[in-house]
Length: 222
Image (cartoon, rainbow, N blue to C red; front, side, top):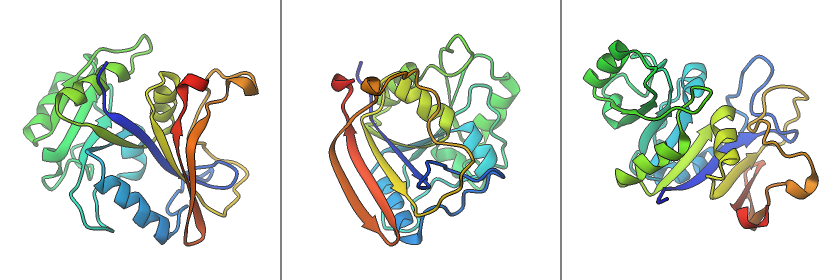
């Protein structure tokens, strides 16, 4: 299958948390590493998040801290819960946003979002009702998207890893310890260390007080 190159990019604490117990996550990373994140956005054809991230954080998903063009925004939203007031839709932003849903999405929501300028992709569903990620990536490739930066959330990241659809990671590690709170990656079905997903061509770069780990995912070694 021809698909875009997929890079996971998220910020976490030393103990692997992407938010505190109360859901607060701004800002785990420093201003310096945020510039790095925006440079990745500018270098990507698309930026993709799940609808949970949209509902929780209402991100703009634009390039603001460096020079460059905004990537296409892709929201994985099986039942189109993205509200018309979301930052990725309002004030004309919908024209640069693709919403990936399934046939379970109400037709009236499709109509409203489409009239605002959003592109609606109705894709096959997995047995648990989620958007089929293989079909989504194939559809995006057909639209000329060659590279995607995925910023969250955990369900989307976990689904991509489970399906072996990730090519690289760029993980910001902040000098913070929370002890509890959500993690970026959920259960991957790995039960022994020998099954761990491994990285190659690993680079560590310091941005302010943060460290960014970049690497290529070695699926052939898993």
